[in-house]
Image (cartoon, rainbow, N blue to C red; front, side, top):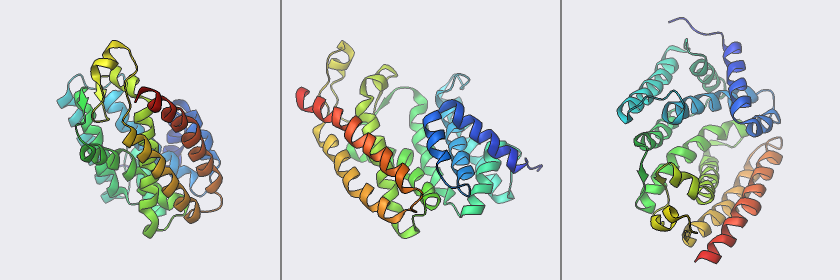
Amino acid sequence: MPHTDTQDAYIRCAALQRRHDPTFHLATRARGRDVRPAVHALYGFLRGADELVDGPHRAPTSAGRRAALDAWQAALADGVAAGGSDHPLIAALVDAGRRHDLPLHELAMYMDSMRVDCDGRVRIGSRAELDTYMNGSAGAVGRVMAPLIGVPAARREDVARLGVAFQLTNFLRDVRQDFAMDRVYLPGLDERALAAGGPAPLPLEEVRRAAQLFRESARAVLGACTPRARPGIALATTIYRRVHLGRIERRALVTA
């Protein structure tokens, strides 16, 4: 198999991140030069999967979207086995995984969560189902990121929990936008209120859980990561906890 030049592959991943997520790209630039390309590479792979599910050129059927995700996951597995790939996004992540000993097998769970979204209509019916989804969509990514922020393997679950805190906050914040896409990630939401355009009561237990996850996991991650990674993590956590989740808490109390 011909292998793509890894330097060019990393450049393509960085460009993709800069175009689609300039805020995250700016935060990535604050990381050390030794790990910055790996963060770009991880973003590139995740963005590639997201495009297969929700992008403008996605397959027109749910079966087609699942098949595309299967092929994307297989391409990563093949690239890891071969030590390279002719697809630039895969090539970059394979190289990053080797250089930084990243647990890329965790991304199988990420792909499972992406498959949930392939049908378009999503209804998560229990906390256990929600936790399974978030473990893939956020927890698995946190475990892969842990080595890149200097967190040892023994503390990897703290990074996973912090990722879940961000994801759960997004679900609470974006209830109406997700409903417009026919997706309900939080069990027990009043869909009739959402459909009518009125304020839908948010589940207070999930609001409180997000706050607790931030309190516990942020402290643990900040204590375990490298000094260079600490300011960015602290800033992102503060914005989410005080701004986004603060607004959610106030809204939840009003609509309870």
